[in-house]
Amino acid sequence: MNNSNSSESKHSELQPFFRDHELFAEYKLLCNNVPSGVYVVPSFKSLQVWHGMIFIKIGMFADGCFKFNLYIPDNFPYARPSLRFITPVFHPQVKPTGELNLAKAFPTWTPRKDRIWHLLRYTKRCFFSINTFDATNPVAAEAVHKSIDTFRSQAKLCVEKSIKLFNKTEESDITPADDGNVFNVKPLASQELEKIKEKLLLGVKAPFGTL
Image (cartoon, rainbow, N blue to C red; front, side, top):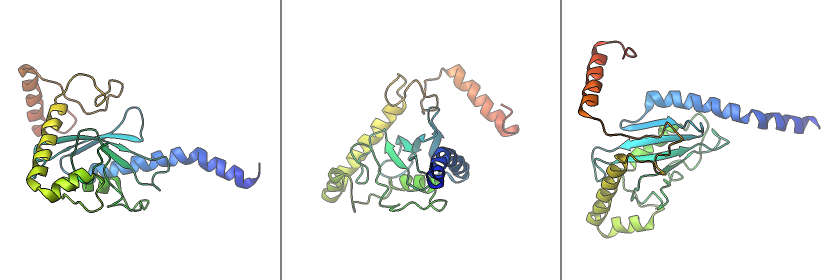
């Protein structure tokens, strides 16, 4: 084997290590810059899959809680991640399959300049900016152009579905049992809720991490 082939082989073997190192750095940056109402955590199964949720307080999607997965490509940080909603989102920039159109905001991905928290900030903004230019969901774009009231009704249906799925407790393809980091909720008895409230109140008076 010549030196060129040996060098390429070594680089290929080290690529996962460099990628994971970049991802740890990205997550640290994200913790300090995460947009309000956005929650993300890496999968237990793969560092290249991050589970997330976005809570919307105002606008046509107000009260919605939308789940998504962020997928990290093998050659990150030299390629853009992709984001797919697993809660239905009727939006001109969201394909019927749930994939958000990121090419519009990030036509190229520059290492260490473009950050995952930038991507998440853009994702949240999409719920307030209903842009139909270069739409990837022509049905949603047409609804915006024909009647904003019709689009608003569809957005409200998405919100209702998101709440229903957020409160769904049985196992499903949205909350697989083999990944403990998938966002899920469970109903709490009044006694359990009171215990949590007590801990939260104690946390205000005590240093973080003593609960």
